[in-house]
Length: 315
Image (cartoon, rainbow, N blue to C red):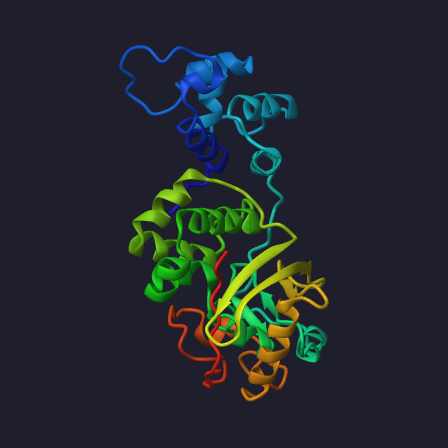
């Protein structure tokens, strides 16, 4: 799915089509040729002329004021994250096209991740590739294995999709991907990922066309149903890795004295039998996306070794 350079207009059109007249106090009478609001209805409610709004949507005017953007966001019922995204689309930061190279996890972060023997931890790349993980994270869930792209796995891997590909989960991961990349949707790795998923998954194609934007929370709780140690309710923290472009360090932890802490301790012992499985190259040359990011298979670890305990995320 190739997007045009008129990102602001595409976003306005996509969001306009999702707002029903009755959502904004207009009577839904007569036959409507287009879904959602008409252009003139949106313009009227936002307090701007129909001609000016048409120029915005068609890309003939790309410099609306902050006040106009806020008015449009109000009518389009955008939340704070979506409103911020609208402003970014109207004020894009010039980006020098980066030469294509594998994402690398800093050596210090690798050492830190591997030092946690009782906390599952992994590093996620800009496009939701798992770049590096400690043995406990790999034992916890197949979605934490280096080389797995979380978005691709949720939509294209049959086993992962069957277990976790609910409407809520898939909608959330697409909105989170939009939030991670912002206006830079023409970056070649992202374009490849979106193109592949758009061809192979009709649901992804529909979700991407909605232009939903919702960052994943920086902290929260997930429940895992593990086949060997049972249920684990774990809290997680997401920390930005400074000096990288969008990498996140994700760490899980259990409430002290809880059954989940005991289950993690047991799983840690099982994971110890896996060996030092961190990322693509255990000697500090990390880049799981380079080695196996194109594959939707979750059957192999980053170094060709498969941990015996396979965990499954339940919620």
